[in-house]
Structure formats: structure tokens, C-alpha cells
Length: 174
Image (cartoon, rainbow, N blue to C red; front, side, top):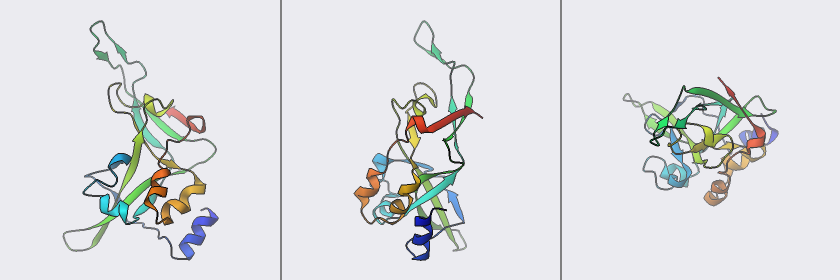
């Protein structure tokens, strides 16, 4: 764990939530909808940001996709890709979280991963079917983790929502 994050934890600026589930209603939230989402807009505005640790993200690709004579896509086989960052065994995806309640009243923490447009990105634009919208989860740099978790400035947090540089990523068939 980076020293800055350890200090933020010790100072009570952030907490580690260990019982968190992916929100089945909205598992991915496009950055353009952060303030507008009825589910996560209030959380975004109040600073309910989180880091979602991961070794990699898994995405489908169709490397043999081509158009036939009529222009219809012929997909070929789906090849699942394991996408990570070079020189680090883990990464953190930008997320936001909220607390719901189980039917018995116990708290249930759920989170969603934030995505950005990936049109033209050398790695992420190759994922999913050719005509599907191209989006990527936001991978934060370790130097940004503390600010992501603690800044009260929503626009400063929004400025961190960038595509990770392709030259620092690795994609391999799963």
C-alpha cells in the first residue's frame, strides 16, 4: 500500500470497505453521467469515491471481425483479453460507492466502476463487438490514489478520469 494511502487511512481521511459488492443495477457508470445518475449522482457530489483493486480487467475482443459484401459484420470467435498495466501486479480502477440496506436492515455497500470513452485508444478501442460503444474503465496511477479518495473538489476528481496510456498497458488472451 502506498505511503500516502497509509497516512490518509491513519488520519481517518479514508476507510477501507471490505464488504462491497458490484452494483448489479449499474456496474459501470460512464463519466458523462456521474452527476446525473439517480443512483450515484448524490454519492459523486458528496465525495463517495473508492479505489477498486484489480490484477486486470477482462474484456471480449473479436480480432477476426470483418464485414461481408453487404456490410454486415462477421464476428468470428470471441477472444477474451486480460488487460493490465506494465510493471505492476495490481492496479486500481476509479469507482464510487453507496450504501444500501439488506431486507433485514443490515448495511450493504455497493460500488460501480467509472468508464470513459475509448474511441481511438490503441488497446481499449479493440474490445467488444465492432459496432459497440467503446469504453474503458478508468485506471488511476498510484500517485493519484490519495487525491482521488480525499479531494473535496468534484472537478479535480473529474479531471482524473482519463484513459490510461496504451504504451503502459498489456493485453493478452485470457
